[in-house]
Length: 46
Image 1 (cartoon, one colour):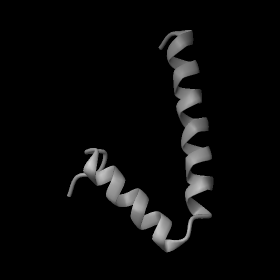
Image 2 (cartoon, rainbow, N blue to C red):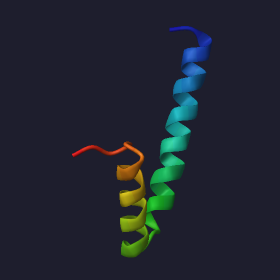
Image 3 (cartoon, rainbow, N blue to C red):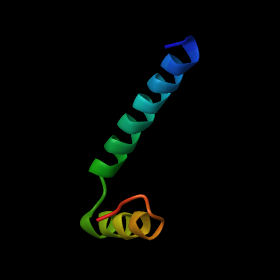
């Protein structure tokens, strides 16, 4: 793994932590809206 791969991986981990923290504070209606938006864009598949 080269230097850039490690930097990309670290940035990805930072982004995931930020998103997780933000999602934890959402109310149910907001989570549902996010869920349906992600489904409609194909980020979540059933």
